[in-house]
Length: 167
Image (cartoon, rainbow, N blue to C red; front, side, top):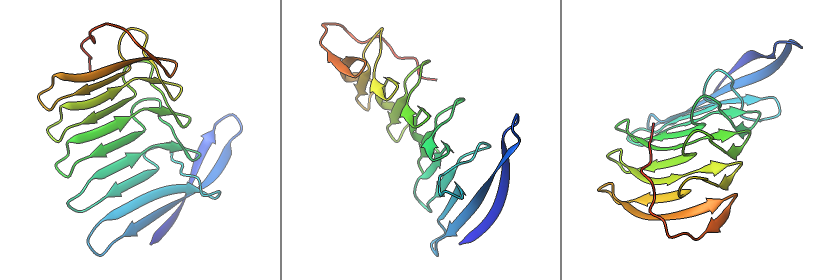
């Protein structure tokens, strides 16, 4: 294991420095894992992923963390890619809670890149005001099932799910 010391300027007004260590682990098979941790052993990196896993002939995983909690404001905090580079899942987190106000908070994909499961969360609870909060798709792309949730509570409605815009 290789260790580097990195100093990040986190709070410009107080000019506080946090000692962040970069740990890199390699396996004989060629896989690697990079972890950025504070001295309190919390995953933390404000400039990129706090955890980056590369597995030979396996997935490539990125986790963005802020003081040990999954957190990213400008994109998904947890992303999983196939060995071919196809995104298999993405999840949006803020301060450790699954959360996304502008679209689905978690999307899981089939190996060909078509959506498998789409879920909308607000503050770690399934929630969508204008449609289903959980939608599952067949490999062909047609809707297999859906469920409506408001603030984590299941709602029973006789409605057809609206088309989802994935970005």
